[in-house]
Amino acid sequence: MNGVEARPSTREAWLESRTKLLAKEKELTRMKDEVAKMRRELPLVEVEDYVFETKDGPKKLSELFGENSQLIVQHFMYGPDWGDSGCKSCSFWADSLDPMIIHVNQRDASFVACSRAPVEKLEAFKERMGWKFEWVSSLNNNFNYDFNVSFPKEGETDDPAPTYNYRPKRGPYEDLPGISTFYLDKETAKVYHQYSTYARGLDILNSGYQLMDLLPKGRDEKDLKFSMEWVKMHDEYTDKPVASN
Image (cartoon, rainbow, N blue to C red; front, side):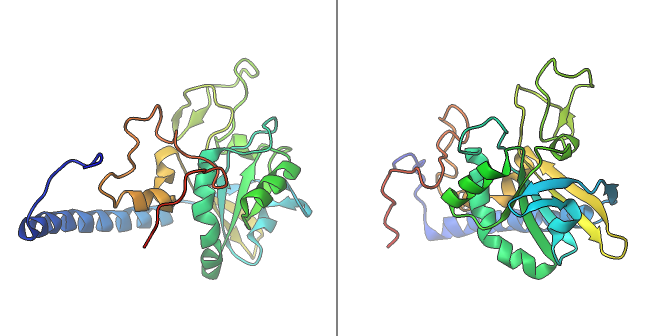
């Protein structure tokens, strides 16, 4: 059956299996609600009002909120010495996030992406991809290092071993992905860090993967060299799209 395990059944047997799955789905939904509540109740930690480079000139972290009091930052892998493209996996996530920002804005929240590449590279790549979100450069500050998504080259520092996803970092990567959220106290102009997630914690934010998880084949990545080997920039796919009618 073209890669799908053959398991023909009757409608009655399907309904019995589906009902068991529904119970698990409801259990998961309740657990997600509980986790979301715990996330909202995390203590807030005041942070430096970092200055970023943007297409409109330098901006403080507090200015990236605009009129809102909440800010989502996508830590997008794009190092200063990279070519004319950022990380393809981060781009996969950005394709999911960009159309949603107009909706998020309605709930007192803003969104930016942040990378260490110079802003000229960021703007050129953003134009190629057709994204509308603001993309800022942390090349001249320590923001990425402070939030554990950028790391010095081995041997360049005597600092303790860096961490990623709240454990010792593995591998030679100088940049890794993440999402962080912040709160701005409008009365004091102080900025607070609320939450950061990395690695598989980002999974739920990718609508493409969430759709694939509904399918008989799922993500269909088990025979690849690594899970996202198949991913390309959205303007690089050459296969004709499958008809949807």
